[in-house]
Image (cartoon, rainbow, N blue to C red):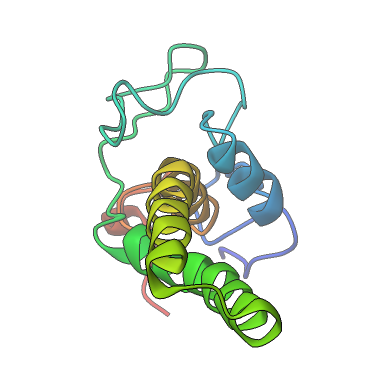
Length: 145
């Protein structure tokens, strides 16, 4: 009889799947590296994910990051720019034109700098949690519960 999962095993037929550390995979993805090995490049263009890792051969095509990285970047940048704007406005009250000259470029630059690393972290999260087709075992190989 096949057993339930332990710390290193999951429901499989006589195979043990690799253990995937969530935080390591997300950190590697944030650094724009392969979530499995940390050596191969994750992106081939600014937001275009490569087909596979050049070092370990991991297939990146199953990822489904979609709009989540953009939403997360909006939240992160908003939590940086809005308190900064409120602090400067309440302490110094500069003219509106000067504020726009500071906050709009700051928002644009922070968004562009964070978009690729956040997308990499989301792909690392998906790989570590075996989401979509990042699972080593196709669903047909896993027995019903």
